[in-house]
Length: 192
Image (cartoon, rainbow, N blue to C red):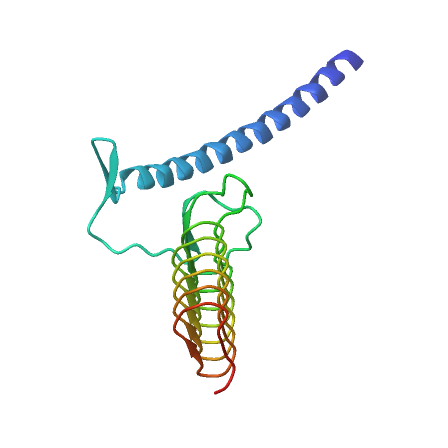
């Protein structure tokens, strides 16, 4: 009698475990079916790209990238801003890359930094555009730190005043508001 009772209890426990296991299997199958449907929807979506002789060609549509685009090498030491564009490779000697850290900024060339909001560095190397809406077009070791300032090229030039500009040359400085240096070497425009 004891053996029969124990067998009945064991069968009841096994039956409950079987029911629980069946419910879990049903849940997994339902979730799997949902995931497969979502996967098929993604697979069935048309691609905005076609492959043509080694090139991926985009459809003639607009693309939106809320955070930004990096073409070339990613510079790990850069705190990329929002809505930015970086184009370039890491420098072979220093390992530095382009860094558009200001929101809405652009950095091209080699080892350039665009840290001001809406600032641009469009070429050259080791240039810095830190002022809001500032720009450096090219050259090397140039800095546009004043708001709305610009340095067009040359080397070691600085546009530090608000709305200041340096067109080119060597070691020129436009530090005054609305000041400008057209070129040459070691020139300074500090007044307004």
